[in-house]
Image 1 (cartoon, rainbow, N blue to C red):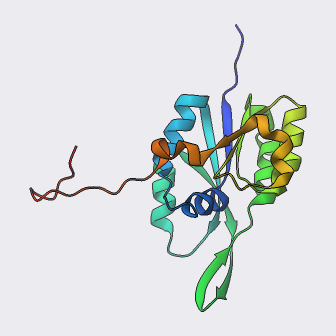
Image 2: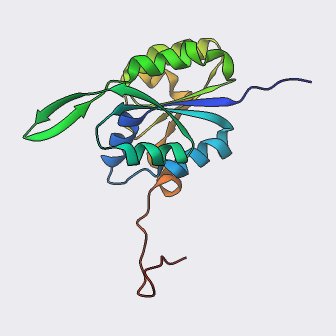
Length: 177
């Protein structure tokens, strides 16, 4: 009997989140997780995310949606008078995909339009372990252009992945079906 390994996803949460928001919509991470599982047999979805104080509710929701969170410490700074946090997850994502989890999956999905992942795309492609590179929109690094056959544009999946506001009715505040 052949033991077929599942596929894994490695997600740069900041790049994906900001990329779709720049187009005026919000990603529903629960829908994304189901999409990855149902469409691409993704058994494990690793979400690389910066650890920000007071975001525990978000982290809990993401875990309940089926993501495995890999936290990166953040640096706090102020930009235009607004508190901002920066957590660069690139090294952790590459390490997990190319070493830590490498033997556990058949094919990998990288989710980021960041050119810093071109070396990972090259490595996985050469090893026949790259399934797709999901990018948030049409604007992605030129360093990933040579992997265009692997590219999946999330903006073209908006109807399947967008977070929709819950519509309230006047009857008991329940949402409409």
